[in-house]
Length: 164
Ligand SMILES: [Zn+2]
Image (cartoon, rainbow, N blue to C red; front, side, top):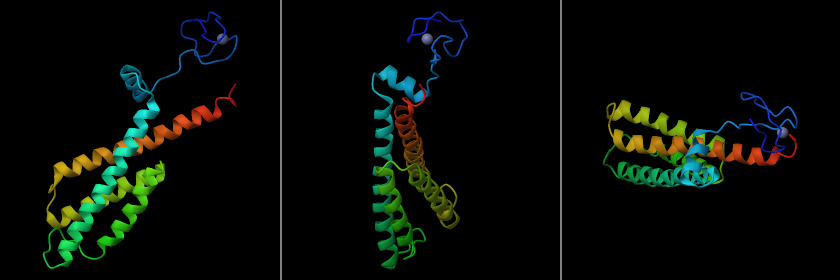
């Protein structure tokens, strides 16, 4: 395989160029490949996933506040009480964290969502609201991947000079 940096011809299965040491065939993630096919940068996909995740967070906050207020007014909908405002508080922090591209907040948001869903299912029966839950699960999971993808991308650019 010909090195694209120095044009040295290496063995077919060589990972690095024996002349200059650069990687010959950088392993590409599925997201990078998807980005190449769509001709958009992987960072754009990561940013889109992050954006979708914090929008999902805002929607989730809105839904929780609405149902909590309904519950507190006397109509017990899904077992929510004033303690749900702790969840709202956490969700606001995590959603803002995702907006700031925090991996930790993306993971915590996903964990909190799963935790709350388990609690809700104990109260309302397993599987209730499953379609909507899957939608949120999808966007929060993509948010986790997106924040990691974003930081991997930043790290790659940040350390490219040091690795030479
Ligand atoms: Zn080379």
